[in-house]
Image 1 (tube, helix red, strand yellow):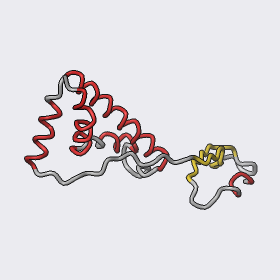
Image 2 (tube, one colour):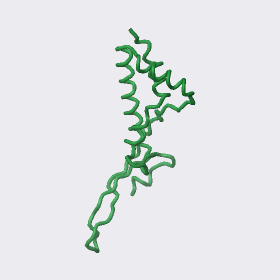
Image 3 (cartoon, helix red, strand yellow):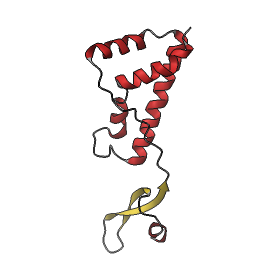
Image 4 (cartoon, one colour):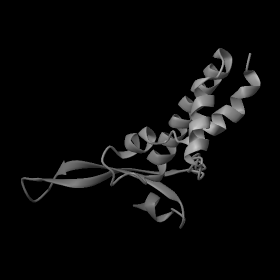
Length: 127
């Protein structure tokens, strides 16, 4: 408990619980097994922008028509984006009450705005 008392207000804390046999009864109880103060990474999520149906179609078409080198870049961009969103979600715990947890969040993370950012970053590699 001494470690817990030293935690500053506003810190992000990851706590792990396990089960242990109660001393006075023949049953298991929850027990705090580990406490870590973590440095929460900045939220990597790209905010959704309001695109018209036509703009969304154009972005989707542009993404689908990227050249080989730009498409490789875009695929790597999306993979890193998913990994970063998953890590942030795991750290911050904002999907703890969502079915599928952070996997659900990552599954819905690639939006038109994200595709647009990938196009912006990767079209400089166009053949």
